[in-house]
Image 1: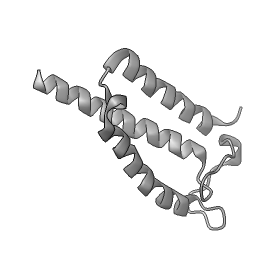
Image 2: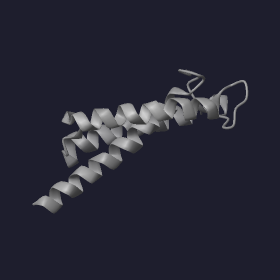
Image 3: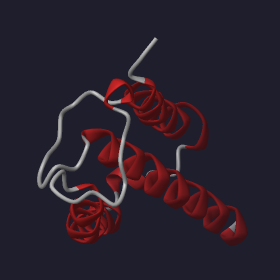
Image 4: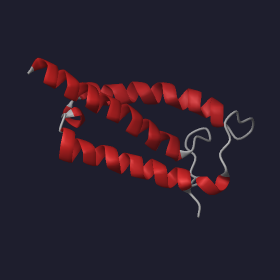
Amino acid sequence: MGREYLVAALVSVVLVVVLEVAVLRSGVFRLPAYWLTMAVVLAFQVPVDGWLTKLDAPIVRYAEWTISGVRIPWDIPVEDFLFGFSMVTLTLMLWERARAREAA
């Protein structure tokens, strides 16, 4: 066994995208506001996550056998970006779906 964090992160992305395309169909991927939101999230995630995971003085440590080992930029595990995408996208999809139902 191994790479649990990587596998979970990848599965979360696939599930969120499938949920949007096949079930919710909220249209978030077509909204400029969604992409702007993702840019803002990244603008904050990179410095904060970089500070938390920097290898020379980490606050958060990952068992090396659970992650892919790919770290970009500033030692941030790529899995953190995948989970961030899933968390923010799922929230916005559900928000848009609720807003559409309320308007109907």
